[in-house]
Length: 74
Image 1 (cartoon, rainbow, N blue to C red):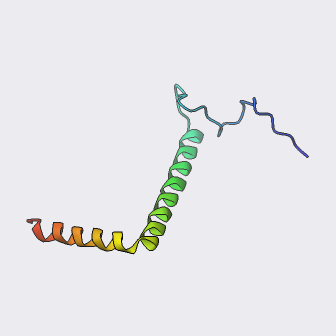
Image 2: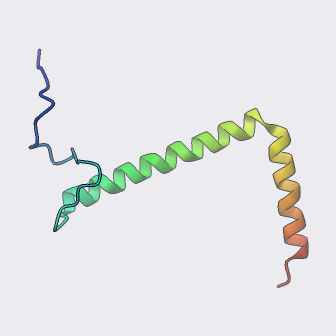
């Protein structure tokens, strides 16, 4: 059984909030893109859940969007 040490700093995926590397390398950029993609997937899932749970709000938003599109001039 492996015990994780919380003070370990050699993990490249482990970043300190607010901390910036002077020269970001490809590994940190790839990790940032993975985190961003995961965040966007979670956000999309949360929006779909909200739409299913609150259909009246969704209908009202659809109606507002329709009004905006009717009043929009090409």
